[in-house]
Amino acid sequence: MPSRSKSGPEPRPNSPSRFAYKADRLKPLRAFCQTTRLGSVSRAAEALYLSQPAITLQLQALERELGHKLFERSGRRLVPTRAGELLYELARPLVDGIDGLPAAFRNQLRGMDAGELNIAANSSTILYLLPPIVERFRQRHGDVRLSLHNTVSADGTDLLRSDAVDLVVGSMQDVPADLVYEPLHRFKQHLVMPPGHPLADKPDLELADIGQYGLILPPKRQITWRLVDLVFQQNRVPYHVALEVGGWEVIKQYVAMGMGISILSSICLTEADRGRIVTRPLERHFPPRSYGVIMRKGRLPSPQARAFMDLIQPDLFVRRDYYDSGHSER
Image (cartoon, rainbow, N blue to C red; front, side, top):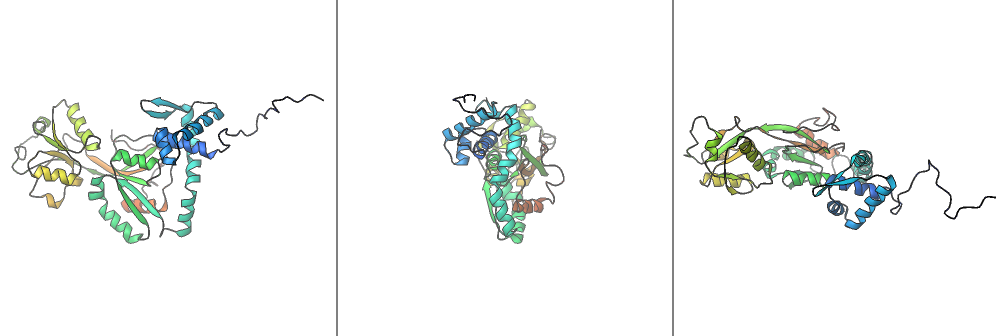
């Protein structure tokens, strides 16, 4: 009778492998998906209410088990390797399906007249675009708890990736590979100034004319500031920002007081602005600004989210495969 090896029997080639970290397949895959979405171990740990070492151990166990490096560093952000991208495509629907099972079950059990809906949007979207849509939604689905999160676009997509919100309504220039952006409205850009300003009646308004006067703009991290800077830089026209301040109503008030001029989307102009500020279209120099819905690619919207999107535009994510790449403003 042959002697038995002290190391024990070798595993069969086709036998299912086991994760080394606590023999739990879901935990490492969930940690991997969150790290891929958020680009950071620390942010993944916050989203999962775990410590950073716990996330690191789970990712290391996953890499050992699969025999491939799953992440590499790009600046301050962790990005998936080719093997990591493949695993993400396989693991994401599994993790999302398991994590979303309780909510999906409750939604099916209770029907549309229950549950909650979380939407991220910037201040201009909440103030100017969403009120009639929110009003109709509340009339039809009064038992759904609706929460609007006032954020800039970048923070809104982070909330979307971490499942803190169901969708984002706003503007987007470059669409990441894991998101889908469906533009719904386009608004022209306008120069706004106080009555009697030298540019109010100037024919053939040029960028150089605008650059002579101090601009009042939102903070740099917002899309409007980056768009204005891009147009002036591309045309090699100097300009200067006299004041940075958040909120379009505040900006319009400061313009009316003669503190400077500004460039804003027509979505921000209302009847109340007539007489206190003067506007001039800038379509010859600035492209129109789009506003739309941002979703995670491959993630089925909840019944509440579908009902809200149908009020914006029926069959919004049925007209094309939402697994495809989203639109880009560039």
